[in-house]
Image (cartoon, rainbow, N blue to C red):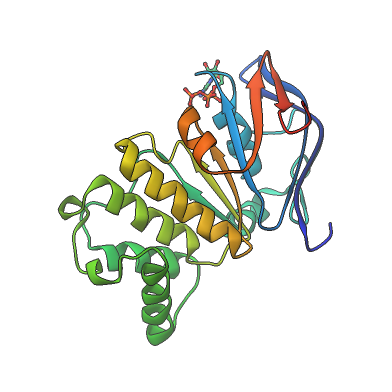
Length: 227
Ligand SMILES: Nc1ncnc2c1ncn2[C@@H]1O[C@H](COP(=O)(O)OP(=O)(O)OP(=O)(O)O)[C@@H](O)[C@H]1O
């Protein structure tokens, strides 16, 4: 795949257990794109995102993410695929027993960062990016929901991924704080990181521009092509 093209799905079918959730999925995502995946509860938004980091298998069709062919990816390569994808969920999933800084350090050490001063510098950089540089020593319970989500985004940025997948990142936040989080994701995408965000929050989709695709009737409908 070219440097610019990050995701290419061609006639992909995705199942959960025996049930087909999405079929004939055709999708391309380029560097710096901001793509919303909208649709009703249970329509397959999370299933689509999870397929991109090999959490859900490709039933048929061709699914390329970076240089990985997902229908053939070897188990040993999955961690390397995931290292290039920043993942942001609705429930923040920070480790509650350690500070912001230690949460971030944990991820870097798990992804083979060893040099102490490089670790410290990288943590500072990502916290600056999300406006949380003064909260490095806080415990997660000392932060608001919006602040916790900023830390989760900082965590997703640690390994400079070309792609961020955000599954309902505003789901647990009030509208104002949710808007700030989406604004932050937009800023990140303008610097070249593609962002795919699943949401049912239509007011956010209207406020912040992006490509829009909708899961409906087991299909992923490209709303950018309809007049
Ligand atoms: N672990 C699972 N095992 C089997 N079926 C599942 C599983 N998780 C989800 N499903 C089914 O897959 C379908 C799609 O679910 P998915 O979570 O992708 O939808 P969604 O659009 O992300 O919904 P939501 O807006 O609630 O997050 C649903 O019908 C759901 O019941």
